[in-house]
Image (cartoon, rainbow, N blue to C red; front, side, top):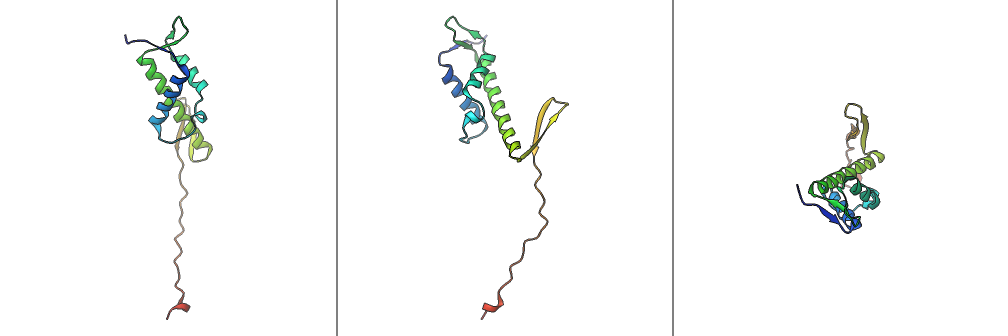
Length: 126
């Protein structure tokens, strides 16, 4: 069994975990509150924690810490995909077989027109 840790600064832990999960996906400087708020992070930590100590501090071990990280990364990734779908940059649909939303890249319209050639102006030639 791995060591159990008490979280003494829950807001700090949630903020750092959220930042680490976001950086594992992308280096963009988006506002993370647009993807997952600190309150949502704290709820996620509460959901996966091992319990509380006698000072009501959240208890975690390495396995729980990893689960929180992975769940946060999936959450941020899913919100990012939803934002792309809302901007009509990717397609999405519900997959009944997998019981989840699936996303795929939007097909670009084919441009069959040839570029117009530039005619030389004969008037200005010597």
